[in-house]
Image 1 (cartoon, protein in one colour):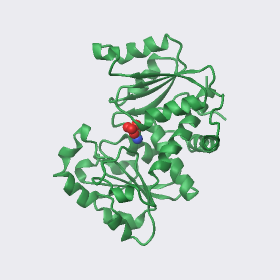
Image 2: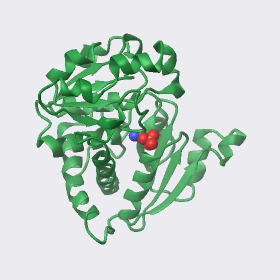
Image 3: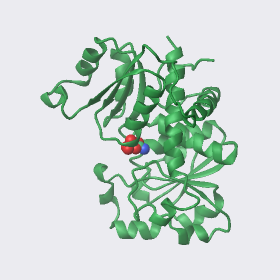
Image 4: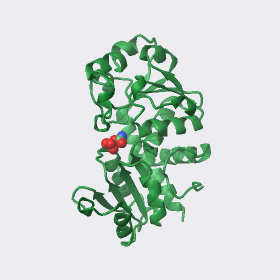
Length: 306
Ligand code: CP
């Protein structure tokens, strides 16, 4: 079985069958991650470059681990320390790297559309590792994998995405992917952090966390993106925490457990209290482990497309 596209740029428009194929393939790779010897040969002889123009901990390490587990040769590129600091364009950077016979490119960039642009200038498979406020498809996939593993199915699952929706590529990928898989998605946050006409994506919008919590099975809590000026859109971090912070006190008011996800990095005691982040219903570290398996699945499946 192959994916319909030879690139993964976003989850908008990716079919139910393709998402299911990636999640099912990731189950096999997760089993491999639990073995004493975690390396398998499918990408032997392939060379992959990780182009990171924005900071990352989880995504970059997770992609690199996934690539090495699949026996690919890996080249890491960070914008700082490269010729980008001398004014080289994304197009020239990519074409020069491709001249060195690269098979796949993983790109993170501050500009929405950067991954799509790369598909026009290089022949390699392109994977979007987060482009501005647009999409972060492998994060959406690993969140869905984690929820499916916990609940057995995504169909009918009620998930609320909480926080800085305005600046979030993770929110968009989750909304597209979860809806395709039959989940009911809502969003909750201050109106200043809510994109205009977000309802048109088919989500229910809440501005009071206590109203939505009794109606959901899981919350995916988003980081307040200080670097994208989000902190200027509400009075103070303390006030944000008071109204939108996911705390044990709030969760305990609902008489059943609610699973808690967060893509990381966490602003502890801002969007999520530390005891919830480390508590029994937190799936945050499962998300990190599942991220490696899901990225292995994406790399493997794209490696089958020529
Ligand atoms: N979730 C996520 O994208 O984290 P990083 O920014 O650390 O890669």
